Image (tube, rainbow, N blue to C red):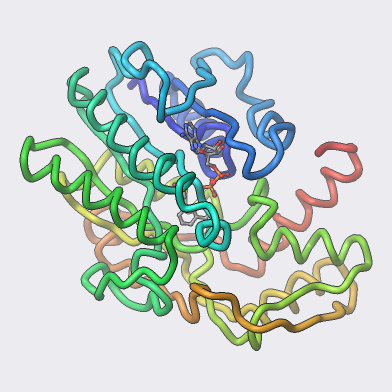
Length: 314
Ligand SMILES: NC(=O)c1ccc[n+]([C@@H]2O[C@H](COP(=O)([O-])OP(=O)(O)OC[C@H]3O[C@@H](n4cnc5c(N)ncnc54)[C@H](O)[C@@H]3O)[C@@H](O)[C@H]2O)c1
């Protein structure tokens, strides 16, 4: 298949592109290098893909670019591009509204115009709000502007499914981690601080829990949703074992052989308290099963950070 992946230079998008190429697909990557974190980090994410047979890259902003040439002739689109991260959405709503809602709408319109046969939207557990425990039918009460814009993306997709039979499926990721994790995300910050011998900052009491999903599990769930997802279907793509932030810190410190120094600050507005994905629907409908335990997954992320430093990479 020829598959367009938006957000291809990002953490999940780049990993997904590599998996799709490995599976024999032709991939058209799109990204605008939005400077939420440095371009050189994203260029490193793309390093393996650039020059790979079957991979084409368009540097393009979905809000303004000419989308038709990218989507023309595509069999499917996997829409990963977004302004991710919750905190900045309190102060930079315009960026979140434009990159998430307006860009998604333009992409849907281009996909429909070109008659693209499949569309997968990468959504988030943040649409559930502070407590994201349970299945897809729990109430949607996002507690941050980020979550609200992602819920709006879901609703846009579903409106087009209902009105025009748009062939789309939605997946909701739960706290993805592993190599290339975004620099603003907790485990990335913790590992870097511990490697520098610096204190780590924990917001709240550290007893918040996460349905952590290792990135290759998330990627597998995404590809299964592409292959088997129902039109208009929504699937939680979560990890297997839910752990607290304190347990994650202990695991990371164990892998690094250090004793972490923890500074505590009050919980931040909009932070989720507990996330625990009920993945029964994805298991039954897609055949999705996460296989990486947080103990092993955090070990692989730690190894990536160490290797990156040894190689002097950004
Ligand atoms: N990482 C997680 O734990 C997590 C959890 C839930 C949902 N998600 C969702 O998964 C997707 C990927 O997240 P990520 O963690 O890989 O983030 P990321 O920031 O690493 O990747 C997103 C990419 O999208 C690009 N982008 C943003 N706006 C764009 C625009 N207007 N035009 C073109 N490109 C644009 C950015 O430049 C970036 O490279 C997002 O939709 C996010 O909401 C992520």
